[in-house]
Image (cartoon, rainbow, N blue to C red; front, side, top):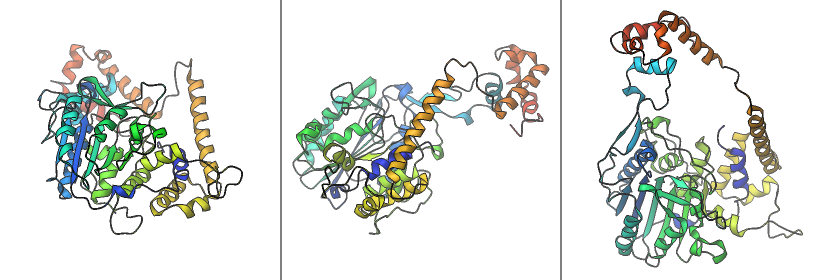
Length: 442
Protein backbone atom coordinates (compact mmCIF):
# COMPACT_ATOMS: atom_id res chain seq x y z
CA UNK A 1 0.00 0.00 0.00
CA UNK A 2 1.10 3.56 -0.66
CA UNK A 3 -0.43 4.89 2.53
CA UNK A 4 1.85 5.04 5.58
CA UNK A 5 -0.33 2.56 7.44
CA UNK A 6 2.23 1.88 10.13
CA UNK A 7 2.47 5.58 10.95
CA UNK A 8 -1.30 5.85 10.94
CA UNK A 9 -1.65 3.02 13.43
CA UNK A 10 0.96 4.57 15.71
CA UNK A 11 -0.90 7.88 15.58
CA UNK A 12 -4.20 6.13 16.28
CA UNK A 13 -2.80 4.10 19.18
CA UNK A 14 -1.29 7.20 20.74
CA UNK A 15 -4.46 9.27 20.27
CA UNK A 16 -6.83 7.23 22.38
CA UNK A 17 -8.10 8.87 25.52
CA UNK A 18 -9.57 12.13 24.23
CA UNK A 19 -12.20 11.77 21.57
CA UNK A 20 -12.91 14.36 18.90
CA UNK A 21 -14.78 17.44 20.06
CA UNK A 22 -18.49 16.79 20.41
CA UNK A 23 -18.99 20.38 19.32
CA UNK A 24 -18.30 19.35 15.72
CA UNK A 25 -21.71 17.76 15.52
CA UNK A 26 -25.06 18.87 16.81
CA UNK A 27 -27.83 21.36 16.22
CA UNK A 28 -26.81 24.97 15.73
CA UNK A 29 -28.74 28.18 15.31
CA UNK A 30 -27.34 28.57 11.80
CA UNK A 31 -24.54 27.15 9.68
CA UNK A 32 -22.19 29.35 7.67
CA UNK A 33 -19.83 27.91 5.04
CA UNK A 34 -16.57 29.38 3.74
CA UNK A 35 -14.73 27.67 0.88
CA UNK A 36 -11.18 28.60 -0.12
CA UNK A 37 -10.24 26.74 -3.30
CA UNK A 38 -7.97 26.70 -6.30
CA UNK A 39 -4.31 27.22 -6.99
CA UNK A 40 -1.80 30.03 -6.83
CA UNK A 41 -1.37 30.47 -10.61
CA UNK A 42 -2.65 28.77 -13.79
CA UNK A 43 0.13 26.17 -13.64
CA UNK A 44 -0.88 25.31 -10.08
CA UNK A 45 -4.64 25.50 -10.54
CA UNK A 46 -5.53 21.91 -11.34
CA UNK A 47 -8.90 20.59 -12.44
CA UNK A 48 -9.25 18.45 -9.31
CA UNK A 49 -9.42 21.58 -7.15
CA UNK A 50 -12.36 22.82 -9.20
CA UNK A 51 -14.01 19.39 -9.05
CA UNK A 52 -13.60 19.33 -5.25
CA UNK A 53 -15.52 22.59 -4.89
CA UNK A 54 -18.24 21.38 -7.25
CA UNK A 55 -18.55 18.14 -5.25
CA UNK A 56 -18.86 20.12 -2.02
CA UNK A 57 -21.54 22.34 -3.57
CA UNK A 58 -23.45 19.23 -4.62
CA UNK A 59 -23.10 17.83 -1.12
CA UNK A 60 -24.61 21.01 0.35
CA UNK A 61 -27.52 20.85 -2.11
CA UNK A 62 -28.17 17.18 -1.34
CA UNK A 63 -28.13 17.92 2.38
CA UNK A 64 -30.54 20.84 1.90
CA UNK A 65 -27.88 23.27 3.12
CA UNK A 66 -27.28 25.30 -0.03
CA UNK A 67 -29.63 28.04 1.19
CA UNK A 68 -27.38 28.72 4.16
CA UNK A 69 -24.79 31.53 3.93
CA UNK A 70 -22.09 30.14 1.63
CA UNK A 71 -18.95 32.09 0.75
CA UNK A 72 -16.86 30.65 -2.08
CA UNK A 73 -13.52 32.06 -3.22
CA UNK A 74 -11.79 30.26 -6.04
CA UNK A 75 -8.47 30.94 -7.79
CA UNK A 76 -8.73 34.03 -10.06
CA UNK A 77 -12.39 34.64 -9.29
CA UNK A 78 -14.39 36.43 -11.98
CA UNK A 79 -11.56 36.95 -14.49
CA UNK A 80 -12.80 34.37 -17.05
CA UNK A 81 -9.22 33.84 -18.20
CA UNK A 82 -8.00 30.33 -19.13
CA UNK A 83 -6.55 29.76 -15.68
CA UNK A 84 -7.56 26.16 -14.90
CA UNK A 85 -5.15 23.37 -15.86
CA UNK A 86 -6.91 20.34 -17.37
CA UNK A 87 -5.61 17.15 -18.93
CA UNK A 88 -7.97 15.20 -21.16
CA UNK A 89 -6.22 12.43 -23.11
CA UNK A 90 -9.47 11.43 -24.79
CA UNK A 91 -9.49 14.82 -26.53
CA UNK A 92 -6.22 13.92 -28.28
CA UNK A 93 -6.72 11.94 -31.54
CA UNK A 94 -5.66 8.30 -31.25
CA UNK A 95 -2.85 8.58 -33.85
CA UNK A 96 -1.28 11.44 -31.90
CA UNK A 97 -1.55 9.50 -28.64
CA UNK A 98 0.15 6.47 -30.16
CA UNK A 99 2.86 8.62 -31.74
CA UNK A 100 3.60 10.23 -28.37
CA UNK A 101 3.46 6.89 -26.54
CA UNK A 102 5.81 4.96 -28.82
CA UNK A 103 8.04 7.58 -30.42
CA UNK A 104 7.86 10.80 -28.41
CA UNK A 105 6.75 11.76 -24.92
CA UNK A 106 3.37 11.56 -23.18
CA UNK A 107 4.40 14.30 -20.77
CA UNK A 108 1.75 17.04 -20.76
CA UNK A 109 -0.11 15.34 -23.62
CA UNK A 110 -3.70 16.56 -23.59
CA UNK A 111 -2.82 19.37 -21.20
CA UNK A 112 -4.65 22.64 -21.69
CA UNK A 113 -6.20 25.59 -19.91
CA UNK A 114 -9.71 26.97 -19.66
CA UNK A 115 -11.65 29.32 -17.37
CA UNK A 116 -12.84 27.67 -14.20
CA UNK A 117 -16.51 26.71 -13.97
CA UNK A 118 -17.26 27.17 -10.26
CA UNK A 119 -20.62 28.95 -9.93
CA UNK A 120 -21.80 31.34 -7.23
CA UNK A 121 -18.38 32.54 -6.19
CA UNK A 122 -17.64 35.76 -4.31
CA UNK A 123 -14.27 36.42 -5.93
CA UNK A 124 -10.65 35.31 -6.15
CA UNK A 125 -8.68 33.84 -3.26
CA UNK A 126 -6.93 36.86 -1.87
CA UNK A 127 -6.05 38.17 1.57
CA UNK A 128 -8.31 41.13 0.93
CA UNK A 129 -11.34 38.98 0.08
CA UNK A 130 -10.85 36.68 3.06
CA UNK A 131 -10.54 39.71 5.33
CA UNK A 132 -13.70 41.18 3.75
CA UNK A 133 -15.63 37.94 4.33
CA UNK A 134 -14.82 37.87 8.03
CA UNK A 135 -15.48 41.61 8.35
CA UNK A 136 -18.89 41.34 6.67
CA UNK A 137 -20.33 37.81 6.79
CA UNK A 138 -18.44 36.92 9.95
CA UNK A 139 -19.95 39.84 11.80
CA UNK A 140 -23.45 38.58 10.95
CA UNK A 141 -22.89 35.41 12.95
CA UNK A 142 -24.11 35.11 16.51
CA UNK A 143 -23.63 32.87 19.50
CA UNK A 144 -24.73 29.33 18.71
CA UNK A 145 -23.91 29.56 15.00
CA UNK A 146 -21.36 27.27 13.37
CA UNK A 147 -18.79 28.17 10.71
CA UNK A 148 -17.55 25.33 8.48
CA UNK A 149 -14.35 26.18 6.55
CA UNK A 150 -13.38 23.93 3.64
CA UNK A 151 -9.97 24.44 2.05
CA UNK A 152 -9.08 22.65 -1.18
CA UNK A 153 -5.98 24.42 -2.38
CA UNK A 154 -2.22 24.14 -2.21
CA UNK A 155 -0.27 24.55 1.00
CA UNK A 156 3.27 25.29 2.04
CA UNK A 157 5.52 24.53 4.96
CA UNK A 158 6.30 27.08 7.63
CA UNK A 159 9.01 29.64 6.95
CA UNK A 160 9.55 30.07 10.68
CA UNK A 161 12.22 27.67 11.97
CA UNK A 162 11.03 28.30 15.52
CA UNK A 163 7.42 27.46 14.63
CA UNK A 164 7.23 24.62 12.07
CA UNK A 165 3.46 24.36 12.56
CA UNK A 166 2.78 27.87 11.21
CA UNK A 167 2.12 26.47 7.73
CA UNK A 168 0.33 28.24 4.90
CA UNK A 169 -2.51 28.09 2.40
CA UNK A 170 -1.52 29.38 -1.03
CA UNK A 171 -3.83 32.02 -2.51
CA UNK A 172 -4.04 33.42 -6.04
CA UNK A 173 -1.02 35.31 -7.44
CA UNK A 174 1.31 33.33 -5.18
CA UNK A 175 0.04 34.97 -2.01
CA UNK A 176 -0.43 32.97 1.17
CA UNK A 177 -2.20 32.99 4.51
CA UNK A 178 -0.54 31.51 7.58
CA UNK A 179 -2.07 29.64 10.50
CA UNK A 180 -1.47 32.63 12.76
CA UNK A 181 -3.24 34.94 10.29
CA UNK A 182 -6.30 32.70 9.98
CA UNK A 183 -6.50 32.50 13.77
CA UNK A 184 -6.66 36.30 13.92
CA UNK A 185 -9.72 36.16 11.65
CA UNK A 186 -11.33 33.46 13.82
CA UNK A 187 -10.70 35.60 16.89
CA UNK A 188 -12.71 38.38 15.23
CA UNK A 189 -15.90 36.29 15.17
CA UNK A 190 -18.62 36.96 17.74
CA UNK A 191 -18.46 35.09 21.03
CA UNK A 192 -20.14 31.70 21.02
CA UNK A 193 -19.50 30.84 17.36
CA UNK A 194 -18.29 27.29 16.77
CA UNK A 195 -15.66 26.69 14.04
CA UNK A 196 -15.07 23.46 12.12
CA UNK A 197 -12.35 23.15 9.46
CA UNK A 198 -11.77 20.55 6.76
CA UNK A 199 -8.47 21.13 4.96
CA UNK A 200 -6.80 19.03 2.27
CA UNK A 201 -3.79 21.11 1.18
CA UNK A 202 -0.18 20.00 1.65
CA UNK A 203 1.07 20.64 5.21
CA UNK A 204 -2.56 21.09 6.30
CA UNK A 205 -1.88 19.69 9.76
CA UNK A 206 -0.20 22.89 10.86
CA UNK A 207 -3.67 24.43 11.00
CA UNK A 208 -4.67 21.97 13.73
CA UNK A 209 -2.98 24.45 16.08
CA UNK A 210 -5.92 26.80 15.56
CA UNK A 211 -7.47 25.20 18.65
CA UNK A 212 -4.86 27.03 20.76
CA UNK A 213 -4.79 30.68 21.75
CA UNK A 214 -2.63 32.52 19.18
CA UNK A 215 -2.12 29.10 17.54
CA UNK A 216 0.43 28.42 20.28
CA UNK A 217 0.05 25.27 22.44
CA UNK A 218 1.90 27.02 25.27
CA UNK A 219 -0.94 29.55 25.53
CA UNK A 220 -3.62 26.94 26.19
CA UNK A 221 -6.88 26.30 24.36
CA UNK A 222 -8.62 29.16 22.59
CA UNK A 223 -11.80 30.39 24.26
CA UNK A 224 -13.64 29.88 20.98
CA UNK A 225 -14.78 26.29 20.34
CA UNK A 226 -12.84 24.98 17.31
CA UNK A 227 -12.12 21.61 15.80
CA UNK A 228 -10.73 20.42 12.49
CA UNK A 229 -9.87 17.55 10.19
CA UNK A 230 -6.81 17.59 7.96
CA UNK A 231 -5.54 15.46 5.08
CA UNK A 232 -2.03 15.26 6.46
CA UNK A 233 0.38 16.49 9.11
CA UNK A 234 2.27 19.78 9.13
CA UNK A 235 5.48 18.49 7.54
CA UNK A 236 4.19 16.30 4.72
CA UNK A 237 2.64 16.84 1.28
CA UNK A 238 -0.92 15.71 0.58
CA UNK A 239 -2.39 13.69 -2.25
CA UNK A 240 -4.99 14.83 -4.71
CA UNK A 241 -3.99 17.71 -6.99
CA UNK A 242 -4.18 16.65 -10.63
CA UNK A 243 -5.21 18.17 -13.97
CA UNK A 244 -6.94 14.90 -14.90
CA UNK A 245 -10.68 15.31 -15.40
CA UNK A 246 -11.79 11.73 -14.62
CA UNK A 247 -13.12 11.95 -11.06
CA UNK A 248 -13.38 8.17 -10.77
CA UNK A 249 -9.58 8.16 -10.38
CA UNK A 250 -9.44 10.82 -7.66
CA UNK A 251 -7.88 9.65 -4.40
CA UNK A 252 -7.84 12.50 -1.92
CA UNK A 253 -9.03 13.04 1.63
CA UNK A 254 -12.13 15.19 1.10
CA UNK A 255 -13.52 12.83 -1.57
CA UNK A 256 -13.93 10.22 1.16
CA UNK A 257 -14.89 12.72 3.88
CA UNK A 258 -17.86 14.24 2.01
CA UNK A 259 -18.86 10.86 0.56
CA UNK A 260 -19.09 9.40 4.08
CA UNK A 261 -21.31 12.25 5.24
CA UNK A 262 -23.47 12.30 2.11
CA UNK A 263 -23.80 8.56 1.50
CA UNK A 264 -22.51 8.56 -2.08
CA UNK A 265 -19.20 8.93 -3.87
CA UNK A 266 -18.26 11.91 -6.00
CA UNK A 267 -19.32 9.96 -9.11
CA UNK A 268 -22.74 9.22 -7.63
CA UNK A 269 -22.26 5.66 -6.40
CA UNK A 270 -24.00 4.85 -3.09
CA UNK A 271 -21.87 3.62 -0.21
CA UNK A 272 -22.56 2.03 3.12
CA UNK A 273 -22.43 4.91 5.56
CA UNK A 274 -19.76 4.49 8.26
CA UNK A 275 -21.93 4.71 11.37
CA UNK A 276 -19.28 3.21 13.61
CA UNK A 277 -21.02 4.04 16.89
CA UNK A 278 -24.44 2.86 15.70
CA UNK A 279 -26.34 6.04 16.57
CA UNK A 280 -28.05 6.27 13.16
CA UNK A 281 -26.03 9.16 11.75
CA UNK A 282 -22.51 9.87 10.48
CA UNK A 283 -20.48 12.45 12.37
CA UNK A 284 -17.48 14.44 11.17
CA UNK A 285 -15.39 12.16 13.37
CA UNK A 286 -16.74 9.07 11.59
CA UNK A 287 -16.20 10.68 8.18
CA UNK A 288 -12.57 11.28 9.15
CA UNK A 289 -12.22 7.66 10.26
CA UNK A 290 -13.72 6.48 6.96
CA UNK A 291 -11.15 8.54 5.04
CA UNK A 292 -8.33 7.09 7.13
CA UNK A 293 -9.48 3.52 6.52
CA UNK A 294 -10.49 3.82 2.86
CA UNK A 295 -8.16 6.18 1.02
CA UNK A 296 -4.96 4.64 -0.33
CA UNK A 297 -2.60 7.60 -0.63
CA UNK A 298 0.47 9.24 0.86
CA UNK A 299 -1.77 11.15 3.29
CA UNK A 300 -1.43 10.90 7.08
CA UNK A 301 -4.78 12.37 8.20
CA UNK A 302 -5.07 13.98 11.62
CA UNK A 303 -7.70 15.82 13.64
CA UNK A 304 -7.45 18.51 16.28
CA UNK A 305 -8.01 16.13 19.19
CA UNK A 306 -4.89 14.25 18.11
CA UNK A 307 -2.96 17.51 17.87
CA UNK A 308 -4.12 18.40 21.38
CA UNK A 309 -2.71 15.10 22.66
CA UNK A 310 0.54 15.59 20.73
CA UNK A 311 1.05 18.94 22.42
CA UNK A 312 -0.35 18.28 25.90
CA UNK A 313 -0.24 14.58 26.76
CA UNK A 314 2.53 12.48 28.27
CA UNK A 315 3.22 8.84 29.04
CA UNK A 316 3.41 7.25 32.46
CA UNK A 317 6.65 7.57 34.38
CA UNK A 318 7.57 5.63 37.50
CA UNK A 319 4.43 3.49 37.27
CA UNK A 320 1.94 6.38 37.29
CA UNK A 321 -1.37 4.56 37.18
CA UNK A 322 -3.40 7.47 35.83
CA UNK A 323 -1.42 7.56 32.58
CA UNK A 324 -0.74 5.00 29.86
CA UNK A 325 2.73 3.60 29.33
CA UNK A 326 4.48 4.49 26.09
CA UNK A 327 3.93 1.00 24.70
CA UNK A 328 0.78 -0.26 26.43
CA UNK A 329 -0.83 -3.61 25.66
CA UNK A 330 -3.14 -3.30 22.68
CA UNK A 331 -6.11 -4.62 24.63
CA UNK A 332 -5.73 -1.82 27.15
CA UNK A 333 -5.74 0.81 24.41
CA UNK A 334 -8.71 -0.82 22.69
CA UNK A 335 -10.65 -0.90 25.95
CA UNK A 336 -10.15 2.88 26.39
CA UNK A 337 -11.03 3.72 22.79
CA UNK A 338 -14.46 4.96 21.78
CA UNK A 339 -16.33 3.26 18.92
CA UNK A 340 -14.83 5.48 16.20
CA UNK A 341 -11.22 5.14 17.37
CA UNK A 342 -11.80 1.42 17.86
CA UNK A 343 -12.89 1.12 14.21
CA UNK A 344 -9.65 2.80 13.11
CA UNK A 345 -7.45 0.68 15.36
CA UNK A 346 -9.02 -2.59 14.29
CA UNK A 347 -9.26 -1.57 10.62
CA UNK A 348 -5.60 -0.53 10.34
CA UNK A 349 -4.49 -3.61 12.27
CA UNK A 350 -6.29 -5.78 9.72
CA UNK A 351 -4.81 -3.89 6.76
CA UNK A 352 -1.31 -4.22 8.26
CA UNK A 353 -1.98 -7.85 9.22
CA UNK A 354 -0.92 -7.08 12.78
CA UNK A 355 -2.15 -8.95 15.84
CA UNK A 356 -1.17 -9.41 19.46
CA UNK A 357 -0.66 -7.09 22.38
CA UNK A 358 2.60 -5.60 21.03
CA UNK A 359 1.26 -4.25 17.75
CA UNK A 360 2.37 -0.67 18.41
CA UNK A 361 5.98 -1.89 18.48
CA UNK A 362 5.29 -3.97 15.39
CA UNK A 363 3.83 -0.96 13.57
CA UNK A 364 6.83 1.18 14.49
CA UNK A 365 9.21 -1.56 13.38
CA UNK A 366 7.35 -1.90 10.07
CA UNK A 367 7.73 1.84 9.50
CA UNK A 368 11.45 1.69 10.29
CA UNK A 369 11.96 -1.24 7.92
CA UNK A 370 10.19 0.65 5.15
CA UNK A 371 12.41 3.69 5.72
CA UNK A 372 15.51 1.51 5.66
CA UNK A 373 14.42 -0.14 2.40
CA UNK A 374 13.84 3.26 0.82
CA UNK A 375 17.30 4.41 1.93
CA UNK A 376 18.92 1.29 0.48
CA UNK A 377 17.11 1.77 -2.84
CA UNK A 378 18.25 5.37 -2.99
CA UNK A 379 21.84 4.42 -2.23
CA UNK A 380 21.92 1.57 -4.74
CA UNK A 381 20.53 3.75 -7.52
CA UNK A 382 23.15 6.48 -7.13
CA UNK A 383 25.68 6.36 -9.93
CA UNK A 384 23.72 3.71 -11.81
CA UNK A 385 22.92 4.71 -15.39
CA UNK A 386 20.16 2.22 -16.06
CA UNK A 387 17.60 -0.03 -14.40
CA UNK A 388 16.29 -3.41 -15.40
CA UNK A 389 13.79 -2.98 -18.21
CA UNK A 390 10.25 -4.22 -17.55
CA UNK A 391 8.56 -6.61 -19.93
CA UNK A 392 6.13 -3.89 -20.98
CA UNK A 393 8.99 -1.53 -21.80
CA UNK A 394 10.65 -4.31 -23.81
CA UNK A 395 7.47 -4.92 -25.78
CA UNK A 396 7.06 -1.19 -26.38
CA UNK A 397 10.62 -1.00 -27.70
CA UNK A 398 10.10 -3.98 -29.99
CA UNK A 399 6.89 -2.51 -31.47
CA UNK A 400 8.57 0.86 -32.00
CA UNK A 401 11.63 -0.79 -33.51
CA UNK A 402 9.57 -2.81 -35.99
CA UNK A 403 7.65 0.29 -37.12
CA UNK A 404 10.91 2.19 -37.60
CA UNK A 405 12.03 -0.54 -39.96
CA UNK A 406 8.94 0.20 -42.04
CA UNK A 407 9.13 3.99 -41.59
CA UNK A 408 12.69 5.04 -40.63
CA UNK A 409 11.47 8.63 -40.49
CA UNK A 410 9.80 7.84 -37.16
CA UNK A 411 13.20 8.47 -35.56
CA UNK A 412 12.01 12.09 -35.45
CA UNK A 413 8.35 12.80 -34.73
CA UNK A 414 8.57 16.12 -36.61
CA UNK A 415 9.75 14.50 -39.82
CA UNK A 416 7.21 15.18 -42.64
CA UNK A 417 6.54 11.45 -42.95
CA UNK A 418 5.87 11.21 -39.20
CA UNK A 419 3.43 14.11 -39.50
CA UNK A 420 1.66 12.36 -42.37
CA UNK A 421 1.29 9.26 -40.18
CA UNK A 422 -0.84 11.21 -37.70
CA UNK A 423 -2.82 13.03 -40.40
CA UNK A 424 -3.34 11.82 -43.98
CA UNK A 425 -1.96 8.30 -43.33
CA UNK A 426 -3.27 7.93 -39.77
CA UNK A 427 -5.26 4.75 -40.49
CA UNK A 428 -2.16 2.90 -41.70
CA UNK A 429 -0.17 4.07 -38.67
CA UNK A 430 -2.83 3.03 -36.12
CA UNK A 431 -3.35 -0.34 -37.82
CA UNK A 432 0.41 -0.97 -37.88
CA UNK A 433 0.63 -0.51 -34.11
CA UNK A 434 -2.62 -2.12 -32.99
CA UNK A 435 -2.13 -4.95 -35.49
CA UNK A 436 1.39 -5.74 -34.29
CA UNK A 437 1.74 -9.27 -32.96
CA UNK A 438 2.89 -8.03 -29.54
CA UNK A 439 0.45 -5.15 -29.12
CA UNK A 440 -2.29 -7.11 -27.32
CA UNK A 441 0.17 -8.39 -24.73
CA UNK A 442 1.67 -4.90 -24.40
